[in-house]
Image (cartoon, rainbow, N blue to C red; front, side, top):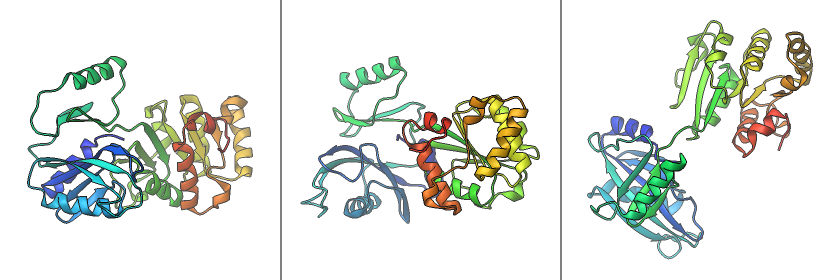
Length: 311
């Protein structure tokens, strides 16, 4: 999670004036964590800070907000009638084309009025730079500090059929995911492709494998068994964080023999998971997508998927 500058810029370009509402601090039981944010404009909103009365009231206030920045505290039980019982501190900031943050790493700004950067914030930012690790979202001595959102998982989806489309629909909304979507021609893709998804038509998709990051997750879901086999062959030669292949146990048994004949060792071949998904969820495309997404997102997913084991 982090400050999604790209999404903010897109919404500002579309709607002009956008208020960003972010959870700056939490106390006790709360529906969302520090750093959760939503964008609000006159006719709509995106993202969520937990729903319910809190989100409704803060979205309403954001549309009427006259000041550039406001810090407020809300007791969820007494004030909002919510049963969480905790309290949140919230920063609401109005943005337009002339006020978008210009940074690549951390957005740090005063939220209680203009003020010089305190020593505590300087130390936090310096420590983050020295460690090469962004700081966690937090409110510190009147300053709101958020790392810029960056994708942490590169996912390459090979195939734009029913399962490929289901995979994109499930995975694309996740802020930590960046998807490259490959198929054999432009007509294979739907008209509306979600933000954060790069469609890549290619007459010979397997030739794109060398261009994928070595730590990407791959899902091989094409309409052709021959293309599936060639993609698996190229991926085993290239390297990956995880790779999954759509198909049955019978298909995978045949592929194993063919991949071995192409020179891949048994341990290499075992790093591809087939079938994919959670068998208990069924074989509907959306059910497969939900199972695969859960595997990719769980901590330790890389090791588990390479071993071909379910959690």
